[in-house]
Amino acid sequence: MPSVVREFAGTLNVPLTLESPSETGGGSNAVTWTTIGTIWAEQLGLGGAEISGIEATADYRFRARWRSDITPRWRIGLVGTLNAAGTDTRKLQIISVLDPDARRREILIVARETV
Image (cartoon, rainbow, N blue to C red; front, top):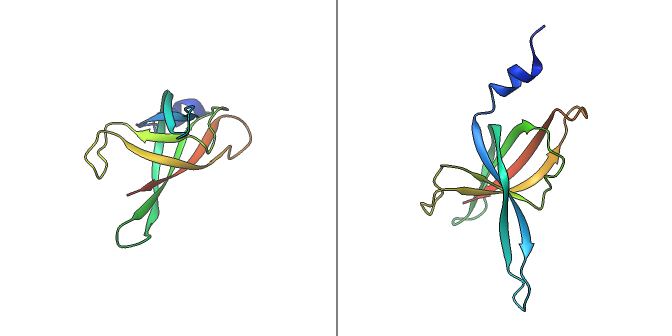
């Protein structure tokens, strides 16, 4: 019988940074992002939409090894890819996180990039 872990590991080829929000004190309540770590995931494009002539979105699904700490308040960065502004990392807002078979082997993360 083939190893599930071995088959799963071969598809995790996209590095993602996990970032958690933290509010700074003061009157402005600015949000800063703290990098929690880097994980490897499988990426699948789900589609996109044009919101207006200026803004568009693209949705992605990422499949990664199980983690219990990721929440929809976090965001992820696609390491080593350029965004529309030409900076090194594209930032995506996490829409949902779920365990597809409730066995704590993998998680599915749906994230949205606004361009």
